[in-house]
Length: 502
Image (cartoon, rainbow, N blue to C red; front, side, top):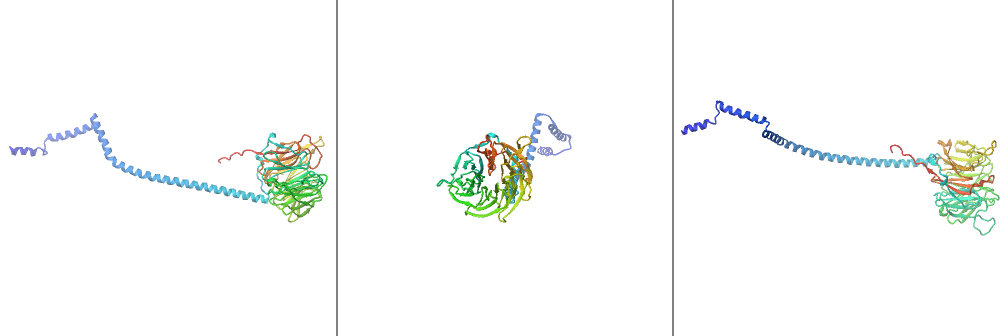
């Protein structure tokens, strides 16, 4: 029995050719395949679990590697991004610095160009088109003189105004408050021990550019005086006007204390114009004796005399060059005097008496005459570059009309802005065309009376007019409605529209 049992045990696991074992194996395979295909819940769970397990068992190693790679790439990208950002910031900073340097270089180059053009007398800044006509209520009126204002000047710092009149007084005004800062009263002729002053009409004034000297010109019963009286170092020049007696004097005064320093003598008739050479104490004077004299105010000395005009000289002006320009009155000429060469250039163009002149820059000037014309001149041509006739219109009965005399002219230095005055109840502003070859009216400022003097401030933000009931050189007419006063006219500029893309 033991042998039979052992035999059965050995034969049981052995594969045999019978159908039962094979069928059982096939059944299990089919069943397992069917079980996998059954839509039962248990089978679905088994399938899902196996699927998840398969993805989890296969993906983890790959995902970890990818995550590590992604982490490594992100860090590199971050470093690269930061590096690019830093380089971009450096580039922007360098561009800003380059722009700043270029801007500074442009500014320096522009300033140097302006200086060169100014020295050559060709600088023409365009400001006239920005000027806005002021309202009549914006004009400030300063009253203190009893008779007509004849001349005025503005200190280089634009803080004070000096005015002179036919009442022989000179008043210093504060631009900010409009109050009187100092009054130089009329001096009595022949009186002893009295303070120095004018005893006749004061006709002209001039200012040294450093503010040290104030020069006043007057006709103290037949002469004119130069004063160097500038409180707070404010200089002034006054231009003389013809009157009765002619003392033919030029008095120099100390600026701060207004003490008389010394007197220049030499002219044989009333002095009609004074001007300091810009940046120096060289003084030019002209007179009704037809001469032009050169003085050194710092050294209290006379330099030389120049002759050429054929009639009484009416006005004079000068800038930084060693030369001056004069208006020849009834001889109908404008002359440029070259002091070192002792020579002169003669210009013709007006048909009447040339009573006023003003330099625009070193190469161009503007003048006015009693024929009603205003002319623009260039030193390279003997004839006017532009001539505006009847600049202030006509007056008189029909058929007997006469042009309004041009009694004063002024120009804002190195710009295209010019102002003229007459007695037609308005000050007129003009715009000079390109190259000073055209003169176009800009706007009118209502002001009743004779406009005997006009001056622009250095900054160009206001214009000062000396107004009187009579012309500064005589008593041909009298306007009773006028007030003898100094008028401060603000010059506001239109806002500049921003440039597209700026």
